[in-house]
Length: 190
Image (cartoon, rainbow, N blue to C red; front, side, top):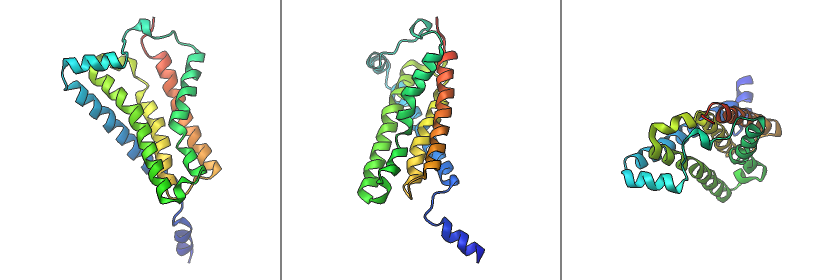
């Protein structure tokens, strides 16, 4: 009797392990897209790598990075949180309720991931290992991006409650704060 009640309560509902699984899949997909674009650009030849460096305005060197400051950390957080967390709003607007809306939301979430991830991978392919000292924050940024994408995947069943959404937003903000601190303090600067 208790098992049947628990099972019926859980059917069609969102569970923390759903978000965890969705986050792991999103995080893996983000890294696959990053590394795939890095390999494609890296193997494309010197002229393509030079073109990518030019198009993306890639300048490596301590003189290009601002000195660390708390204001810089918060500016990076303020920039990155909306990019990573907007998929939380898809449940608020009811995108999970209609098939077409779910498809459109899926496309928007994937497009957001591609627009943010592919240029980083291309830059990595164009600059090679010389870029690594300038991106120590990348695992944390990708974790924050994956929280947003994972939240949408979990919300496809039902919208998150306000408490669940705020928890995901707090986790996203926390990892992006760590990323911003690393990007500000751990990269070479003059």
